[in-house]
Each structure stands twice: as C-alpha cells, then as structure tokens.
Length: 322
Ligand code: 2P0
Image (cartoon, rainbow, N blue to C red; front, side, top):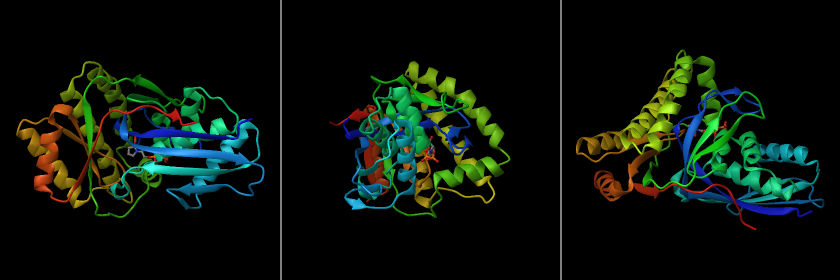
C-alpha cells in the first residue's frame, strides 16, 4: 500500500452562498450553493501515514501548528479506510500571505484528496466531495473546477457538489481587493450558526437562495453577465444582512469594504459593468469580464492607492501531484 500522496486544490468563491447548516457534525447545508473555482489561489498538501508516528502533525507554510480540525478530519479518513496510523500533513497555501484570502475550501479539498489516496482509498470525485465536506463546507465545491453546485441533500450520502460547467469558455474574472484593516474576527462556522439560531429573516434567506439557484444557472448558461452579476451581488448582500439581523449582530464590513463597493457602483454608472461579492471577511471580490479588468484595476488603484488587487480566472478541480 502506498502511504503517501499529494494533491492540489483551488479555492472557490460562491456566487450563491452557503450560510448555515442543518447538521453541524456532518456539515449539511441549509441550501444549495453555486461557486466559481479560481485559478490563482490554491493549496498543495502532502500526507504520509506511518506506523512510526506517535501523533498527527500538521505543517502549514513550513511551520508546525496544532490543528484540531485537521486531526478530526484525519480520524474520519482513518475510520473510512480502516487504518490506525497517524499522519504527517504538509500544506502550502499559494495565496499572497498578506491577502487574508487563505481558504478552508482549498485546504480541505486538497487534504481530502491527499489523505484518502495515502490511506489506500481510491475515491470517486463525488465521494471526495462528500469527504471534503466533512472538513469544511466550502471545500465540498473545490473538488471541481469552473462553475460548481453543492447540492445540499439531507444526509451524508446525498450532500455533495456536482460540476455545472467545468471548462469555462466565458472570460469571467474575479478581482480580489485586499483590505488590510481587521474588523473583529468571527469565524464562518460561528457566524452562520448564530444566524441560523437567531435571525428572524432566516427562512426568507432559504427561500431566496432556492429561487436564485436556477436563475443563476440559466444566466451562466446564456452568458448573461448582467443577470449573473446582479444575482451574485444581491445574494451576497442578503447574506450580510442576515448577520446584521442576528443576535448578537455582527458584520464583516470594514469602512474600506464599503468604499470599494461604492467604487464598483461608480464604475457601473460610468458604463463599466462589474459587481461585488463578499464572504466572511472584509475583502471585496469584483466580478467582471476580461475586457474590463484593466480599466477596473486602474480605477481602483487611482482611488485607493496602495490597495492590492489580485485578478483570477476560472480554475481547475483537484489534482494529484504525484
Ligand atoms: C460560501 N462561506 O458559500 C460561504 C459564503 C463564506 C461566506 O463557506 O463551517 O469555511 O467550515 O463549513 O465553508 C465559509 O465557510 O465553513 C463559507 P464551515 P466554511 O463560500
């Protein structure tokens, strides 16, 4: 049995977001979500199981750090594979370190692929997606490239991602605007469950997300950028509105996030079509077409000098490295 494997997975940004679980142990989401896997941000992870190890070790970007979530995930892999050896996990995040874009999506997708292969399993992509889900919800989608839908399901077997359009011929870009100010950190995990438990608007969110998924798929199929962008921006704002309606209420917006969103609206009024989305942090991601990338980035840099912008295209699904 080969006890070593390495894999690369890219991060993804949700256009229709996952924000709440119906099962926190199995990570079963309340609604389907739909994302774009990106080419620029990825994680490389190698895993070795060895009977001489006396504990699990996790090395991230060259530094050993204890991580209970990685250990719990390795327990799931060992149980599925029927092995008992501890593992050494070595991960490198290929995301500019200052960007604050490091993502549990690429991390757990790469770990699922590397750990399952190193443990002797040969999982289908569907089963890899189910396994990645146990580490982090958004990782479910990073098994596939391009546009991906996570079908919520209602149990461990039927909650997984499916590729919607893996080979994207549409010249869609995602510009990540890196905002360095740090508002109080609330993890996605804690934030979304506070919302599920306390927001009076949560049922409306589910209804709206379910309504938006088929509309978003239709817009992507037709390469209807206006509908796609409007749906993505509205969905993101609805998610952030839930956070303001929770008890205790919270927000991921920083003053600079709002400034960037205002600049996107200004670009639109100038006839340059682009839309924003935000996740569980202050960075703003701008969705645009390749032809407008240069004008958007120079407008941003003129108005917010010293702001880092990172441009991504659609990226591939998980790959084995050896
Ligand atoms: C998403 N996010 O659909 C949403 C939108 C952030 C905002 O999935 O608890 O790290 O590990 O399942 O996946 C980020 O949350 O949370 C996320 P867990 P995860 O991309």
